[in-house]
Length: 120
Image (cartoon, rainbow, N blue to C red):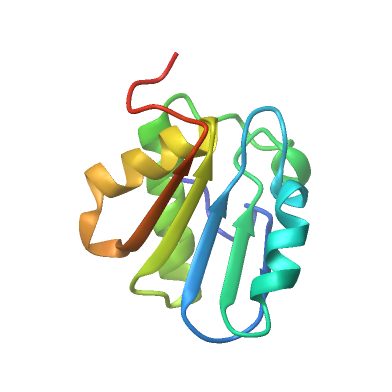
C-alpha cells in the first residue's frame, strides 16, 4: 500500500541537486537537521518522516523496507525529482539500499552509513 504524499510528512529546503535523507529507527527527519542546514545552500534537501515515525506517526507503519522504498519514490515523483543522492543511516540504509535495488534509475548516488545489505 502506498501512502498519498499529502499525508507523508517531509522537510524540504534549498535548491539544486536533490539529496534524500532516510532516517534511522526509531528517529524521524529531525535527526538530519545539521546535514540539512549544511547542504541547503547548494542542494535541494528532502528528509521524510517514514510511515509510523515523527509527523507521519499517524499513518500505518510500513511492513517492509521495500514498501518504504516505494514510498520514497512516490515522494520523489510528487516533488518532480527524477534522481537524487540518497543517504540512509541504519534502518534508513536498509531502505536506501532497497530503493537502489527496486528503482536504480532514481538513485544518482548512494551513501549507506552504519547499516548492512540484509535487515536484522
